[in-house]
Image (cartoon, rainbow, N blue to C red; front, side, top):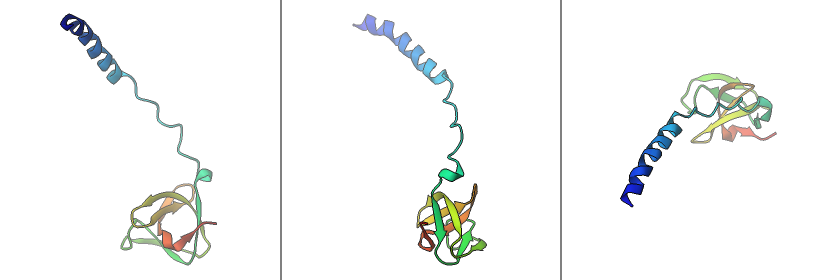
Length: 98
């Protein structure tokens, strides 16, 4: 039994090294296109902020009815919005689905 393990051990080590040396999977072709991202509308004029926090700097004010694509979410109900690229953060209580 011991001699079988001694013979198999080098093979196992080589297999492990080969797995580590294998090329990484290629990166995804491209992130989802902006048309595939969910959309939201601003319920009432809302501050578009630089970060997901009520004290983050205000980038601009989004008008009532302005449409955005959703790029991400953060704790506390903050939604990252923008067009083809992320633009800023608005609290979810100020947004609605179209």
